[in-house]
Length: 551
Image (cartoon, rainbow, N blue to C red):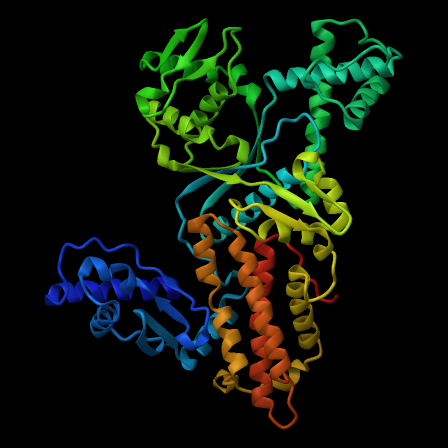
């Protein structure tokens, strides 16, 4: 249990005691009690606003209600002071002695500090990116890739068994158009200047590049249009597109455990099995030559086509089969998908299909990524203009790319400031954090460890305001990991890492680490630096960002 959880649980217990004592009415529906950090440190280290939320329901003044709860509150072992502040907050400050004890825990746990067994026994599949293998990834895809990979690291840190998966849409209309487009490029490489991509097909240098490479390997033996020629083109072109995607993802430190082929759903009979099951359950009907899933029977506004009048399955149909395979055949306890904003309307109908197949739809969670705008003094492009992931990482580097993609919640539009991302100053947040780590490494490398080896460590000497503030940030790492794992919002990592860096730079400016004539305090401050290094390195590792020794 984290400190915030402990405070919230204590408040809940106080409410129950007040109900038992008759000072609060029984049977009231109390919301989840949430503990937050006050913006102003004068309001304590933690604050709870439950009295403000419940004042109307109880018919009580919020300040009076807050005082009543505090009267029934057991003294926390870590609390230095608990008080009520208008208009009804319950505030709490932690004791210096407890803080120093937590610092000792950081040393004991080392690189595993903040980790837990919270998710042990739960098998989670995290599927993200999953772009058609028809071309290079652009910056819109990069956002989901970075968020997904960082979220996976956090979920693993709190005990979940995580499988990261890329769903290859290697079947259907888009692959056909891609194949025909590459075939046209191949024919042009053979000398046929009249060969053009089909209507709705793909164009660009990468298409020509794939066509040229196939020509170099095959010569002109595939010039005659035939099913066999297109089949061979599809295999080679798709393989090259997938390698291009892998190459881009590797540059962003994004790696998948499984690359799942959509085509395998058809080759292995999984698609036919699911369609037959839905038909047996009475959820499929024919209309206008097409096969429809009766979504309205499950609360949807309209039915949805699963097989077109042409006989070709829709993307929706294969997605139903894919998710049935996730839950039923591979037995994931929980499935988390990260999709682009254009898939927003697909969520409810996919959940309806899961319900029809006797799968608990609450086990399927979908995160939606919003648009990215690249900005600089010379340009402003939207992700839709196909600025590629590779172009971005080559311009600003992987660390800045990952940090800025993680800096905002997925459901917010992201203005990606290229100029700021390449600035080597405190204005650049990722530089600011990395510089804090590098500064600590410099301090520790200059310390004569033998000088302190026989000196008892007295962390109670860390009484300066800046020292206390830094320690209060360090101990929040377990709470942050729990928060990210529960909300699925890894942007909190950037926020708290920045706060740790800020507090460390303030401490460094206020407190000389090595003091002549006071080895005891010097020793304590060296160890505070070491604890900060552990926490900063952990935050950076969870974001897959380097923790440099020097800058």
